[in-house]
Amino acid sequence: MDASRGSAVAQYERSEPVAAIDDLSSQRFYHGTRADLKPGDLVEAGRTSNYGRRNKTTYVYLTGTLDAAVWGAELALGEGPGRIYVVEPTGPIMDDPNLTNTRYPGNPTKSYRSREPLRVTGEVTDWWGHSPETVQAMKDGIRGLEPIDD
Image 1 (cartoon, one colour):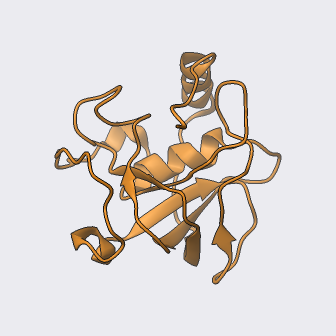
Image 2: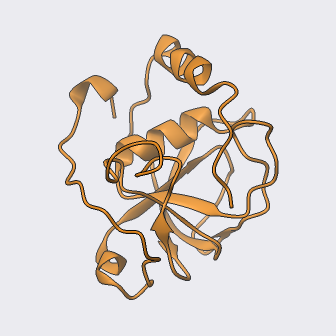
């Protein structure tokens, strides 16, 4: 999705973990990456972070918006093409403090994280990325930014 198209996103606050059976369980979630996955595969913590010192992460990340997933796919490390998967959490999820109240008000990108794996249920193949200049500007903007991964 082209960032210039924009989208309206409801804002809310949540500081407690969200149980997988909570009201968000019926929402569609996405995960942007460069990994080549298929339905049934699990996205698990322990991979190298795409940000900061590139330490191994203790969470997996998911989003309720396609635009945030596009950014995840475009910023992911690796040589393959960016890919966006439809995923379902296998355990509790919580707001991602990298993109919520700690750094931005509310949760405008509907970004979450979990210590439990995400199960791939499908792939989105008809998405549009940002221009190379826009992606580079984002990479420059996050350079040196350490993820909140505690």
